[in-house]
Amino acid sequence: MHTAENKRPSFESAPTAAYHQVRQDTEALVAGLSDADTTVQSMEDASPAKWHLAHTSWFFETFLLAPNQKSYRLFNETFPYLFNSYYEQVGDRFPRPSRGMLTRPSLQTVLAYRKHVDHAMDTLLSADPDANTLSLVELGLQHEKQHQELLLTDILHLFAQNPMKPAFRESEPLGVDDTPHTDTGWTEFEGGIRTIGHKADGFAFDCETPRHDTLLRPYRLANRAVTNREWIRFIEDGGYGNPALWLSDGIDHVRTGGWQAPLYWEQVDGSWWSMTLRGFQPIDPDAPVCHISFYEADAYATWAGKRLPTEAEWENAASDCAVDGNFLPTGRMRPRPQAGDQLTGLFGDVWEWTASSFLPYPGFKPAAGAVGEYNGKFMSGQMVLRGGSCVSPDAHLRASYRNFFQPEKRWQFSGLRLAEDI
View 1 (cartoon, one colour):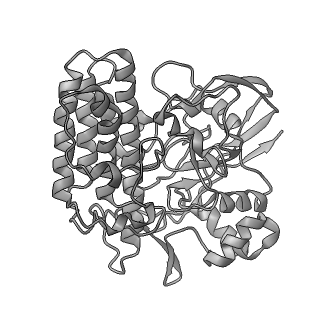
View 2: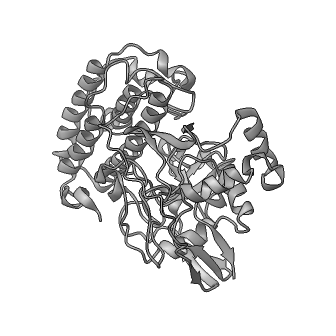
């Protein structure tokens, strides 16, 4: 179910219309937020919504407008310093942990900055740009879609710190079915040499290439993601207190962080509740568990007598599946139960942790120049997630898409699916 995104202009046929659609989608996410809501930074990993709005404009200004449009004038001379994220070759940047100190520029000024950039991009796109320029524009749009999801995860973390537990969107209480659902079983896959990586049909990030062969042993994947109901059993069995289940770094994070449940979970009168983008809600027992770290996913798999799939196993399973699921355009903004007697929910609901480190594929070479810093420089100390989440733009996803975070991170919409050897 590609939802509304199927009706939106494609970049290939209408690049200018597609550009404005993505930019409008981003601004729609901050509708109703105050300047204060978009300024505060809740932790070093998160960024203020206002910063996301400005940084995605900085990308187009820095990599497309300044190099290609002689008449272009910077909106503000300090913005290249304020809104550079991590591009060392572009210049100095404002420290990431201090982004919440940027009370100025105001939200109104940042939105004016976006209009300034959009007007100049109209001029650039109307001038019959060459293929290389169009490719960079598309990268900028895909980059902005990534920030749409990051903006929402960061807003959720911010609102979760507020004792008032404000809702980002109007609260819609979940209908909770207390009847246990039966296990949906497993799907088997043969071993052998399989080819993974982007197939060169449409856009992909550089880290999805080159396409290459890999050897898989026969394996099974669970037909659905692990649920909240199952995770509660892990908690009640003392999973967070049993060091035998955990990697050494993982149990250190459990102890220093005081982890006793997934991020945002709280007990209310003996029942589990969680902070969501629609406010404080009861846990839906049969929805996929969400906001867990790689360490928690790995410990659960050990407790269950299973393991996490490798990213090659996940992609092999997903390669013939339609990219359908619960994505941002559904408006739900929470995982929903996955049901059926076949492999389901690979796309949407929650990003699924894999057992694979984020490393370059054989033959990988980053692009020349500063744009080459996009992914390659992060290929150390991070784990791969696959499939997208309930706040991912759906047209942004594909079977070869590689997301990645450090193994202790929990504020993303991350869950897990079990695997086992045959």
